[in-house]
Length: 218
Image (cartoon, rainbow, N blue to C red; front, side):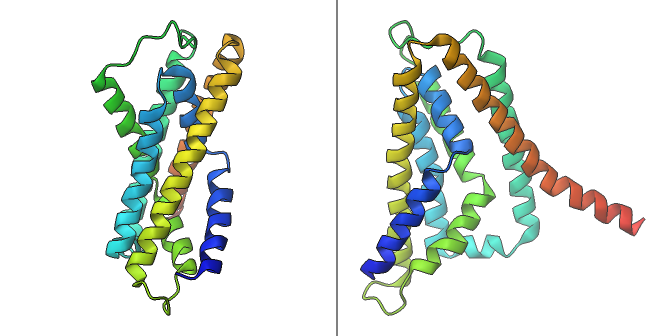
């Protein structure tokens, strides 16, 4: 693998992972509401690992070339974000943010949090398009490693980076806000609102063109 291309990929990947979005919102909410944020971060990483597998198998490019499938994935991801945002808003007032007072989550609850994280990053078609559009730009056909192996290594590098960065985000939120329940609740409220807004925007991207096309045909 070309070292210069790899370093360039690291810079771009870190910049993208450090850009606040729904992943950040979920990480912060997990850091404030759960005793351990590891299941949430692991779930987010699992979703990107799924994108990596699809990329290596060549399925990511195939899905990207099927607008109908991407449309349904976008709608599903949007509805899922709306549900998570609603769930966060519904429980933010009564949430307990003291790690001492919060009981350890049951294994089933931790697994549910893990699956929610996979849903956020795995169902999001923008993540899939990121892998399809960006990762190939840093693959060298002349390198000793085969292209699928290079793609897999770059994808796993991104998974590792987001795992570290999202863990830092969740930990920082907990350290700064666990002794300030009022501020913590406001941040959790903002996280829920961000999920709702992004979910609504994704859903609008699918509904508005469809309605416009239907009105044009009529």
